[in-house]
Image (cartoon, rainbow, N blue to C red; front, side, top):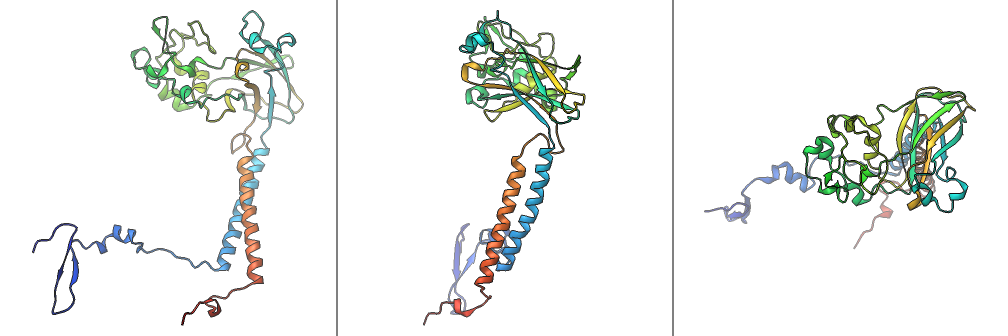
Length: 346
């Protein structure tokens, strides 16, 4: 008798009915037991008491976690100042695009920031851009990671079009992301003394060590007829120009912050910090906004109330559900095994 794989045959035994014989005894196979849901498993009985206790337990966990998270967020001190409108002279506010494109007009501006509470070092300096879509598909793809690592030795830069080359020579770094580098600059002072800004180690360590070459230098960058953003020092390797590294890590949302530097001094409450800035970057063409942010940090990071509020909301919802279930159970108890709830058919 021939037996094919995956088939079964029958054997008559002593006049009894034929029984199938499996080619492979898959019933002892763990995969078969898994697909047939025969594996040992914990199957708790969801009685009203266990459901109420489970929701109450989740509420008792989420609410304290949310409150601790909110406390950490509220301990962060932030100073935010929008300057893109105020730093435009009165006579140019009806045509801001003409102002930002005219190199003969001074872009110097001073802003005064009052510290609401004491800020302990390090104090992080961010620039914030709103209505800026770095997550646009063509914008995100307009770069060459191999060129950033290898430099002129890599020729496969077709993804950088239309900023692949200029005047018949390749551009390093190529692409729209590098071309649109943020180029507003800030200088800070408190009273008669300047505040030193540390601009080292503001980029991710993985970017500095593995994504940007230490022997790759800018070449033919911003030399075309259309200038995008900031320029790069051709004598410093890409891996050491950390403002470029920060900018090249594109944001997922149209409103984002990027680290500019750190102030290594404490600021006291009611201190006035003077920001001397150059308003160079063009956000007026697309209705964008520019802000400068001074912020401390906590053990959880920067200021963000969402995580704490979400935990408090979920915990409160669980407690509310447990109370509702408890009231329903007290009002209409249903003992386990009550035959009155069984439907018998004659």
